[in-house]
Picture 1 (cartoon, rainbow, N blue to C red):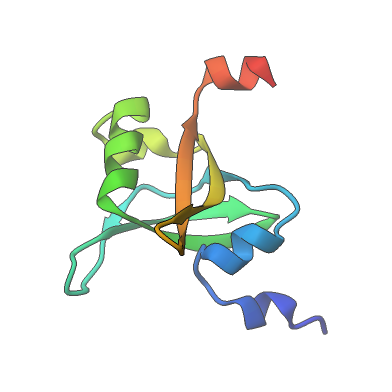
Picture 2: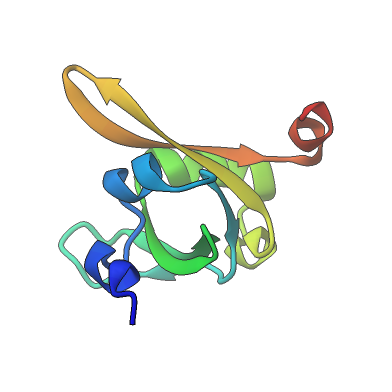
Length: 106
């Protein structure tokens, strides 16, 4: 049994994005509130044929709302492009919602 998927964890993270074959993910669940001290939202995405949990930052929420609307159930089956960007010497997870305009340009 290949244990690679178990070793990489349940969450979308910088290492997963750096090592995946395609950084494009499909949202497979609406966003749910998290019971952590930050009260962040999370949703399930399919990336590299694996289901992972994506924890959204405030910036991610704002860009998703702008691209796909305020109701996260409307985000299901939409695509996002993950990338790793360096911000003041620290790697950060960046996300760009993909709409039909972007997909036609590919």
